[in-house]
Amino acid sequence: MSDELQEAIDYLPHDGPPVFRRSANGLDIALPPSSAEIRFSSANCRQIRGGRRPQIDGLTYYDHCGFHFADTAEFLFYLSAWGEWPVESALRFRIGGTLVTVGRVSPVLPLLFEPYYRDKYVLQYEFARYSSIRLTGVSADEARSVVHSALFHLNARYLAPAKTGAQIMHLLPPGRPYEQPSEDDLGRITRRRVLTRPRLKTLEPGLLFNAASTEEGEARFLGFYRVLEFYFTRALEEDIERLRLDGNTTARDLIAVARERTELDMLRRLLNAALTTAQRTSLLAQLQYRRLASRKPSTDLAGALYAFRCSLVHAKQAELHRTRIPDPLVEDSTLGSWNYLVRRCAELTIRRYCLTMSNRGHR
Image 1 (spheres, rainbow, N blue to C red):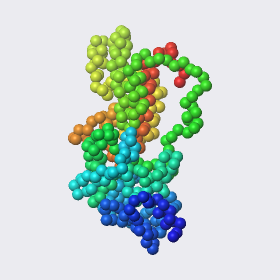
Image 2 (cartoon, one colour; image 1 turned 180 degrees about the horizontal axis):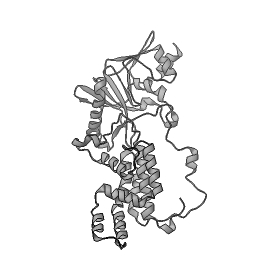
Image 3 (cartoon, rainbow, N blue to C red; image 1 turned 180 degrees about the vertical axis):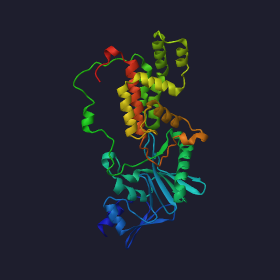
Image 4 (spheres, one colour; image 1 turned 45 degrees about the horizontal axis):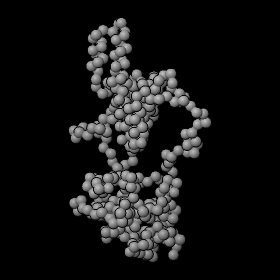
């Protein structure tokens, strides 16, 4: 037996019924409960030994989260707070003519994925323990829509007793920078000097900021946006007070300012008051550099943040072109940038309104 063939066999489970047959040129591996088998040639075994994903006719990979072959598709997932599928037995139900199996991964998935993605540094190993949603009786064209339906039924019905939710898991491919702080970055957390930091004059925005800091994804953005909402009226009152003390301001001017009560008007007024020109310019540069703005060059930070916020909270069927519909099979490359921008705006706003000018401490 060649070393390549033996190494491929080592990735397969050996604690249950046989799932593979040796052939003269490689391995035939079953995809239960389907009758389909994937044939791994000697060349495929060499690919596995070399840490590559096997390239097989009819085999389609979904970006770092699953595959389709014959009438079978399989997608990795994890459970919030639980991680792996928490029980030994699998859950089965049907969506039309497709059988859905939820539980531990099939025998073939570790062979396809672990040699390529295995990385103990980012905790990607022992793939046989991972969890998956397996679809049997589905074409490659239908697999995406069926797995979305399967996730809905899993989250809405089956996982309710466990008070958790399932989401597709994307593996970190080789060469992708891992967004983990380096030892040098972690060393900057502690300081030798004992600095004096100011107490918050108002607790509520700090509580909102702290809660948002522990969230992830879209919830993180909306959490920091709530900090900005907290100060909408404050910025308006400050503007009215300034104009009231200005001898050149007429009653008509005050009425016009007081009527500017749309959320976008309030956000724009707040950012103009809370952020310095240099700070707004820096954040606009980030908006442009990360290609988040639809207009080039973008000159409206508030407009961009407000449009993204609306895309998260509104889902009217007639306005789906402006709605952000998350696709769990596609990695989101922009959400982290949006979260950075709104977090920075929230931080600067708290510094402007909630920390005393005389006791700001060192940054």
